[in-house]
Image 1 (cartoon, one colour):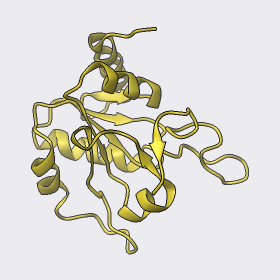
Image 2: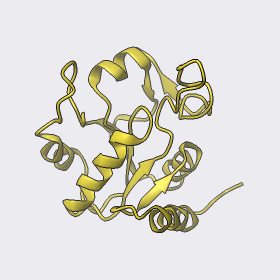
Image 3: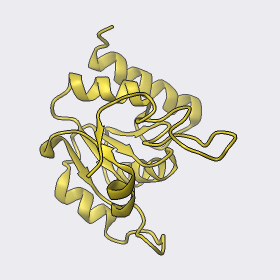
Length: 155
C-alpha cells in the first residue's frame, strides 16, 4: 500500500495528540521507512551511542539521508552537551527529521529537544532499532527496525 506523505504526517500528529507529545509526532518503523521512501528530503538521525551503532548495527541509508548524533555518550551514559549543536550542523530545522534509538526512549527525548529548538517536523520512531525486550530479556525478537526486516547493516 502506498501511503502518502500527508497521510503519514497526519498519523504521526494523531499519535502526538493521543500521547501528549511535545513534537510533531511518532511513527512505527514501517511507517518511518515509508516516509523516507516518500520524501527524499527527510532525514533519519540515529541518537544511539557510536558503540551501539558499531556493535549492533545501523539503518542502511545514503550518507545524505541519515546521520548519527549521540544523545548520550558511551561508556558513562551522560547526556551529550553538544547534541543540539551537532544536530543543527547536520539537519535544517525545516526538514522532516526522524529520531531513532534502541527502543524509542532516547529518541523521544531527542525529538522533544529538537522541537524546542525549532525543528517543526521532529518525529520519534516508535520501537527503535532493537525494540522491546521479550520474556528472556532479549531485544530484536518482537518489534523494532531490525525485527521488521527494514534495511540495516553491521560494520
